[in-house]
Image (cartoon, rainbow over all chains, first blue to last red):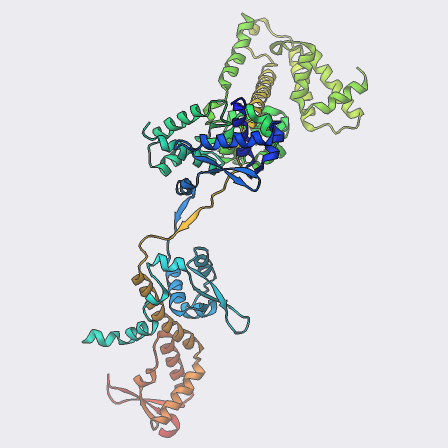
Length: 182
Length: 182
Length: 239
């Protein structure tokens, strides 16, 4: 291939640009025909097919983009700094209130917990354990919170139906002393 | 090479991250030893040496970074704004003093440069090329400055040990007067 | 030298050391053997020129001028021959050290500049900026959730009572006790007044209310024997 070194040029160009580069733009920069660009890209793709390569070129809207190989997504995901969230007692309590009393407003949670829950609620939303599910028809139309799919996953539940019945729980509570005496 | 496919993983990781990736981070993600990472990177560098490749790996700040080849800078420059963060001579001189004399106070820099360096030092701090590294045990406990990881990255250094040797220059200078009088 | 020439140079020198280095280079003199008289003279000429052009002469330039003059005067002092042999310091030594260090860092700056240029040839991608991902702790158990709820629910009942308690004033408690006494036919065992007392706060309030009622002679306290039950009765009834 007489344009051999231009493969390197294309690789460098796609790399440095990040976004897709139009084929005719590549042709112009390299002062070659668009057909040659296509041929060179085809060769590059082939070169990248081996397991010892981690990149791939994808065709995007009349241009090309350099990407990491899709099958390496899990590896690339390793770059994400993983921080294990500690579930504080406050978070756990608030989450339990949302779980068992949903849909529920901040004010209602605050009434039960007796403290301001702005911070905790935001944290739970950020961790996508709870989310806004609507507005309460009340003064100020406060946000109603409910649990998310991530919440179900985190607790190994299939659906909210797997949560024990709140009524039972409270009933249990009140029955507890009697059960203990038996 | 039994880790052959991991070369592709490293390429993908360096590509995806953009910034340099620390060797031990790569090792951790790939669940291999740091020595193996170094060996794989060395192989990758060799693979990239050919004219049909446009990328290169450089050692920066204790890690590796994927870049376009320096000889392709003119080609790449046809596409992207090659970052030209021009630094003033004053900034460069001040930076070199901090680099070689760190930890160093503003007063010490001023003594060497013979001018006030407040503005320049602030600029360098803003660009995160230098940072406060402590306080000098002296009157007024003046701030001590040192270089940052961004300094290493900006100058393509793996560590401060890669700086040209100032000791040679100093030795030359101090020996000179004696040599001349003899 | 023409004044125009000065102007060009005056704008060039960042500080006194830069100016001195320029003079040394221009005169092609040995930095280790600076002809201090000549250099000082030229240095002062620049300062004068600066003033002529109404350029603010930075204090650093003036400090250096003073230093040069001091060195010059010390150089002129006759030295006793005996001391000349001893390792007496050359008055120029400190200045020479400063100039050498200054020159060294000038060179170093040039080297760094080259390194930066070389580095800029390598074009990197913008940092992807993978945000830190917060993962949930492993082993979240449903039991934990239920426990948390049970705990918060129990304490919530307390919480509710606490709020109510805080609203109970001594005045209210006094009314309560009187009402209770009337309902009970004007006589009540002391302990019964604390029937609703779930907390220390309420007990204290009740006690204060009792003391107040006694002080106002609305109720009386009776105890038949030591350690026997204490009875409260409506003051007016007993009266």
